[in-house]
Length: 104
Image 1 (cartoon, one colour):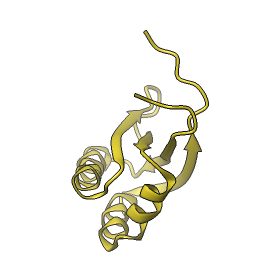
Image 2 (spheres, helix red, strand yellow):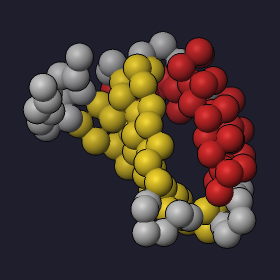
Image 3 (cartoon, one colour):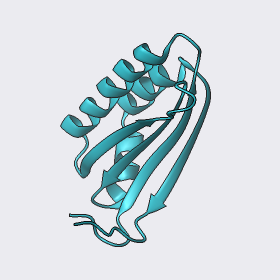
């Protein structure tokens, strides 16, 4: 369950035209590796813009900020992220903390 202050990683992606499906496959491989190999990784989502199918936003939920730092220090992180970025015109990473999470 989400908790206030929980760390989230995020990316804003603009994928090269015609590379959208390849990008989704690479992002899935990157996040599968992360879930399998990065302690503290909880979940990931990739959201596609309805009006511009080349634009995506990704979010990753983490146990602790330390887990995020350790994940980013692994050599595979740079390699797999780089494979995603190679298909993009723009990439903007962000770090967030959960402020609120109402749900039913």
